[in-house]
Image 1: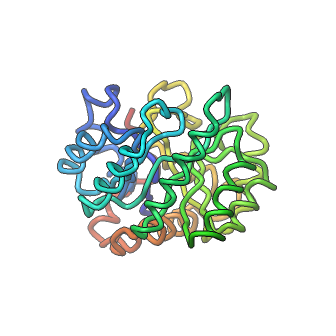
Image 2 (image 1 turned 45 degrees about the vertical axis):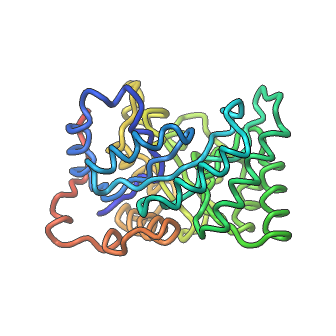
Amino acid sequence: MPLVDTHVHLNFETFAGDLDELTQAWRQAGVLALVHSCVEPTDFAAMQGLADRIPELFLSVGLHPLDMDKWSNATADQIAQLAASDSRVVAIGETGLDFYKADDEAVQRTAFWQQLSIAHRQGLPVIIHCRDAAKATAEVIREFQLTVGPVTGVMHCWAGTPSETQEFLDLGFYISFSGIVTFKNAHQVKASAQMVPADRLLVETDCPFLTPEPRRKERRNQPAFVYHVAAYLAELRQVKFEDLAQATTLNAVTLFNLPKSIAVPSAKTAQLCVPNPISG
């Protein structure tokens, strides 16, 4: 069954030596599309170079909340221009709020609001990073929706409580789960993963971080391992793997406006999808 890894960082140096092999591994695992998140706009040229090599790679552009030393009004203009410059851009981000040990909450809020504005103007979803800031993140989104207009997106690598999860669902957002959900003690994440409606659920690796079980001993995560996230979620939610894969793929196609053929792969493509990726 097809899968979409909705959050990768393939431009990181750890992938430089064997990206061709990793590409083959994720294709064999049934991963038909990937969304490459952006930490800062200066990464975008390298991301475009990767997308030139990998046709199933789609792009986002934004500034991560932990990189506010790089924020200015010129940054907002740069993000908007880059997003409009390449048809492979399917989202703004990753943006959001991270109040873990933060002393720059005000500038984070400003940067977040302006990136929401870009997404709204260009009709793109946002990829949201949220750490120790669920209440504030929801407040910003709600105020934006009420005063400016609609915006949607995904809470990426979600680790919030069920009540926080419901708040973002009520705001119209998708919820994406990473390898964290497979970790033994991630009880609140598992509870959240069980309550998300099937039509709002996404899967991701956030590679090279957060390798899922049973590949946890491998320090570097990779897109093929999104299979393990999806398989675990299917078991947790007590549904067939095929149904969960189909639902999350359709959701990714819908949210990011990906080619509809991804959700209904050809018979030839489907034959490449093996039930358990073994590449490391």
